[in-house]
Image 1 (tube, helix red, strand yellow):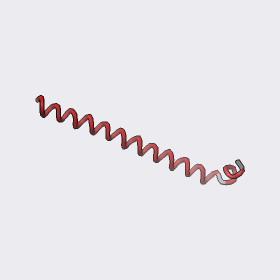
Image 2 (cartoon, rainbow, N blue to C red):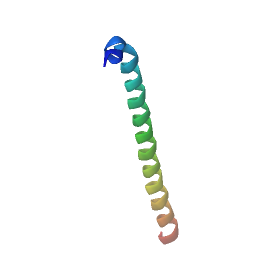
Image 3 (cartoon, rainbow, N blue to C red):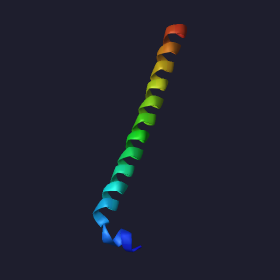
Image 4 (spheres, rainbow, N blue to C red):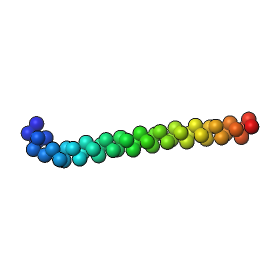
Length: 49
């Protein structure tokens, strides 16, 4: 506990970096899903249109 209280800046930066990584990973997954749906719709339009 003393370590964390001794250096709050480094832990905050680390937690922020981890949060940013999770956010970027989430955005990547989100865009992958959006792209997959778009491609599926385009394929359906080509085959059935």
